[in-house]
Length: 94
Length: 193
Image (cartoon, rainbow over the protein chains, first blue to last red):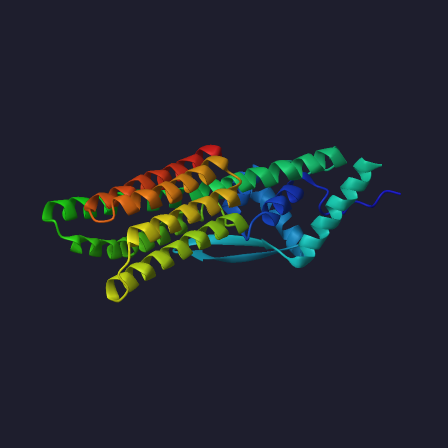
């Protein structure tokens, strides 16, 4: 029996964003864009979806005079990511 | 990067996760390289300044210059940290490296102050061993054998040399050598990206 893959994570961009955030304490919007190669608009939409699901937090602030959007993965997001990887293993292993 | 998941097979998902994690890890570690270079350059400048001051005047009081190194270094490191946050975030390894070298700085300054104030000792010997330990532990954290070996050579070789050179300004050249190793560690981290 295969585990169902989390549809929110089973998307290239959202999965890449979660992978970056899992491996960092936090990451800002510019860095996420560099790492994923996504457009600003697309990335923004996907971050909103992840935040709405409670997988990440998005904090808007300033660094000096420059606006800065910082994202962090939540415990819920960490658990969902771990479950997703476990599901992938069940697909590949069987 | 597309958001369409129609073609996203489990194999491709795992590959994407691995690639992204690895790319992110490399970016973060390369970001730490700048701090190694900064402290390496500062250590070289201060060790040479103390060496020339001491050897020309014949007075070891020039060692007081060492206390200016954190005064110059920490504000520069703070500025570098603010700039590098635009390029790469922090992770466990980069935080750990910061703590290792912060601890080294704390012990070096404290031991120097204690030696000057009340407990005379061979400060160069103690600091070079601490330096070697910090470098080796950094190499272990980064899983980088050249850094581990360089740390061991600097720590053990430096300890022997510190005993031989204990009485003269030449011992400052030990720190110049250690500075080169530190800066090269930073360059190695940046190149690894």
